[in-house]
Length: 232
Image 1 (cartoon, one colour):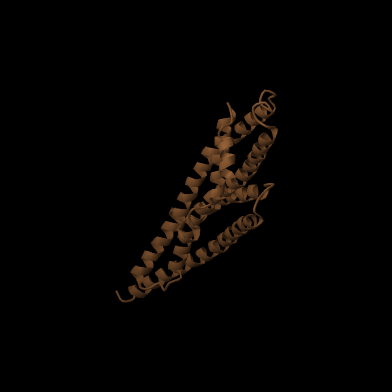
Image 2: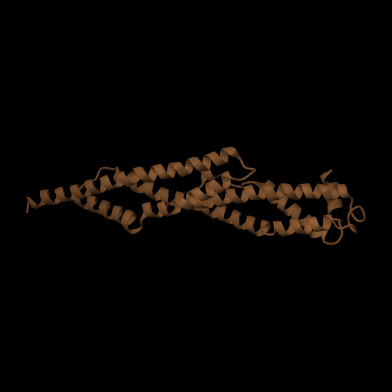
């Protein structure tokens, strides 16, 4: 049945032929899904994969409105309707186009969110790493100084917290954009919103925790210096 329909579709005349070819390309992309498991990759790899998917998506679907407008014009052309192409065939193509437009909107907003999501995760991974280091036993003076320098480099120089805070409004906006779609996956939408809330809560607790650890490190360094100076 599909081969028969495809043969008929690709034999359509004039301007309908490239429209049909685009419909098939679009349907193929929308049916493809993800060809990787984000849970098995590090944030940098996921960002790279989703960025590539988003570029591919934009390349194909940026002309969807133009395609749809051109098709509607041809569908109303009396020299085509029931003359060159049966109205039933045109209605079938129209239905497929509508499905593509709605589905591509959902996919586009999904990929849009995932890009910013993995940008945030890259910095979150760094934040988790520095928190893990800070929770370890501090050791001697040299080790404590090294730890303090690492803390200052990540938090004050590279500004991990500030970077995540800067990405949060865009993350929230893209989650909201997805949630406002007429057709969407409700579980995905809930997951996006939950992630945004998790980021907000984590930032709030991390900021307080890091400030406490900074004071503790400074105090430990001072104590080490006092202790060692007593032996000079």
